[in-house]
Length: 350
Image (cartoon, rainbow, N blue to C red):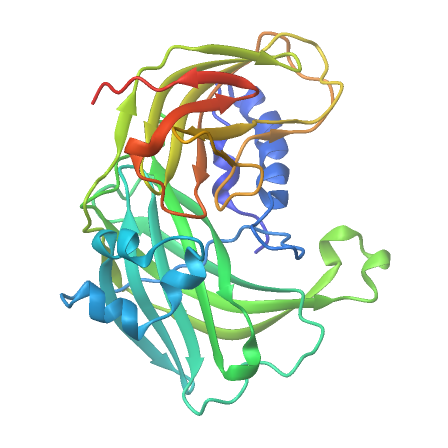
């Protein structure tokens, strides 16, 4: 239950190497920070499925508060044109699970959804809730053998008003080639999902860290719902080929993709040492033309952390790195990316 296939971002050339790096990257992905000052032990996908319907994005934004919750420092008028309203619901056990909207770029898709009790009563009475989470099982209709992975985070996780609101970001890659799959115009198909919360387990010391929290399920459902990923692709590709080295890891950047939603880099890691003396985590910043810096230290989708321990010298890992912004940033405002402290000017190629 606690395992998550985000670990499959550890992409390499032999099964032995993959097994070792998979464990490291799984631990990292699970400990990546969310943009909230609370403990978030798992970036478990919080997502559901539905059939898109047509309606006014302006009216939709006025009806729902999720845009302000998702992008609190962004002018809503920048977001609304990128939104495909969905508003399709599943009703079960006197609760309603509603997919609110979908938006995305070439390789990332973001969904917003709400769980609410029909009678308006609190979804939980526990006072020591640590995290609200959601576990799902889904695939891509047009590419059933591909891996679709991602992370979720709460927008409004106060259960006392009988409603919880979440957002999630996901992407997909081909199992054989280990390359990202453009998701625009594809269809996410969901088989099941569970919404649950965690509370501290006072007996965790007897069983180890994996038993540190108790899990209580609030809503569970099997489903065959679909989400067509219909939106405008605002992704821009920039010139790549740069090489950066830090902490004994050499990174070759093969592709740079930016959109107002976030960044995706296709990179190759090569180890230049037999042992990492300190944990390694990719550093990413976005430099804007007005001189301001967006820092990806805390971001909504991150992967690629390696613990300090022995590694295989000259081992190579091909992977994709994601940073999803906490506000909408027009691409025309972007000047450079800063990867592991090295500034790389942006030269648009498509």
